[in-house]
Image (tube, rainbow, N blue to C red; front, side, top):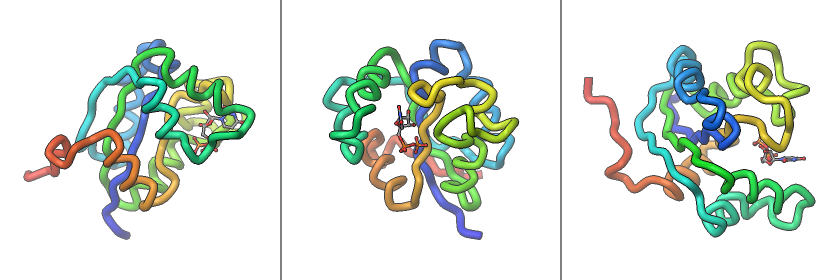
Length: 143
Ligand code: UDP
């Protein structure tokens, strides 16, 4: 299996519930290594640009309002098949459909406030990493 990088956000609902450590523990237990991490409070422009593919959908304005409602943690994760591995531990977009033991099943109840974001492909991962991190903010493991 290929070593990949993926992009992740711990969303404002989970940050507000003090779940940063618990969710980081899920990443590391799943074999995902954190190569970059920071807390940010997204601007309206940042959130609109990040979710540009959803512009025009009925949930877009609410999504942007939610994502700018408080601080988030953004991170780069690396590991075997990291994109899919992260999507698996996140669970389905709607927490009501998420498998037991996934982050969204355990820590969220609403599709609109579902605790985490994770890239859905290697192409979007590269784009999303570059949207929030400069190259020198990403620290490959040297040991
Ligand atoms: N979303 C929403 N209502 C919907 C569908 C999506 O509020 O009916 C939000 C939800 O927070 C989701 C985000 O929009 O995480 C992006 O949607 P996507 O389909 O890309 O889901 P994801 O990749 O996050 O699982």
